[in-house]
Image 1 (cartoon, rainbow, N blue to C red):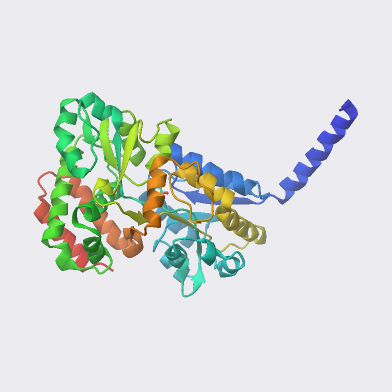
Image 2: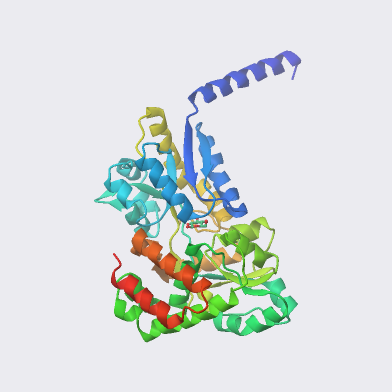
Length: 412
Ligand code: BGC
């Protein structure tokens, strides 16, 4: 190409760029995705949105959902709404919707046939209040995973456990080798999360549903749940020395072989991936703690506050559409460690853990995520109880169970 042609070419693309830029609308998006794997995943959303000619303005809040959600809510209720925001599937945005602060995307959902493409069906139902659609589900995350470090067990000279009981039995060997058997971050949601994973593994799906769906306080106080409290007592002893806050710091203890394992949602996979670790070679993932192979159906949805600016309002629709597009669903979820919300995408490159999750999902062996069944108030009471239980060795399992049953008796 001659110099003149090249110059014309440059001028042309510069003016096209300027035209594009003139139309690019900034949209601030809030979320709590700050770990290595999470950041890699959210970058896929930003890239896809920017490719629509708009501009993703990233507003990540560190410290997990419990820190981020009150900030999102106070910004929306305080008249300083963002363009879009993450919440978990379930009831976290219920009051914002009832207060009329959030956009209704029923028309877009109908136009793009969200009801036909989103699976499982109840994810879109979770976005629907009084027949209107208020959010776009972007993934399926499950909590029911035990992540085990091959290095930690090799160093301790014991085989990688195949289930929770073997893991508890291996704890003394891990300790003798200077390892923390179980890594748990100190943020309250992590201890509640681990406890909620122990319920279906130790007491079964029915007990889980009786407690969280039916709010059956007798079952919460009964002998099956006593077994779960006994397992939680083991978990707190095994995790006593894990002196970290964030979930990904705890995951890092597993990645580096300083800890034997961690009970954590499948978002941990994103961080194993960023660290270059391979499932089955460097680490093992046991769904349902290797006892009862099921997964909870939780995860993330994006909500869109009502805005006055018509350009931003249009950009919100572009964002909702692109989040559900097949290419974005694959790119985002492969990095996030979650499963796509559409079944018609190609997951040939999914890793072993994700394949296990997909298989369990296809068998329908699922439970709802507790945030979908409990109000935020109930979840916060559970968080207070479990962080105290894990940090206070003389709070007995019996006393903790009594307080747990009271929370369930008063839950809404
Ligand atoms: C979200 C995940 C996130 C995790 C840890 C969960 O509530 O659903 O997307 O990775 O929190 O930050």
